[in-house]
Length: 85
Image 1 (cartoon, helix red, strand yellow):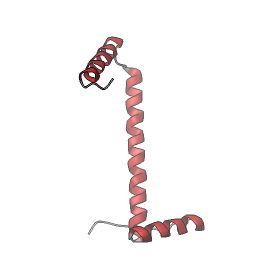
Image 2: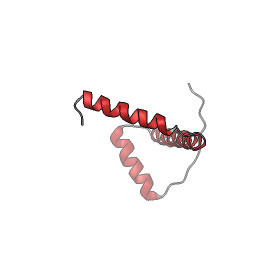
Image 3: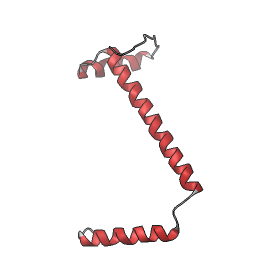
């Protein structure tokens, strides 16, 4: 069994009832649906952080203009070969 902790939370009534309708429809226990929501949110936050780090790194060292032009040319040629233009 995984390590778990019990917590108590407060929600606005409207949000609680929405959550109850969804979890019942999906057949999840209350703890399971809250766990899924938290994991989704944490994953989203991690993804946002990765994008932010990528953008910061790109600002420090962007691709050279020649490299971008070469990629554009290669993409155009690939599309032309596949008759996607």
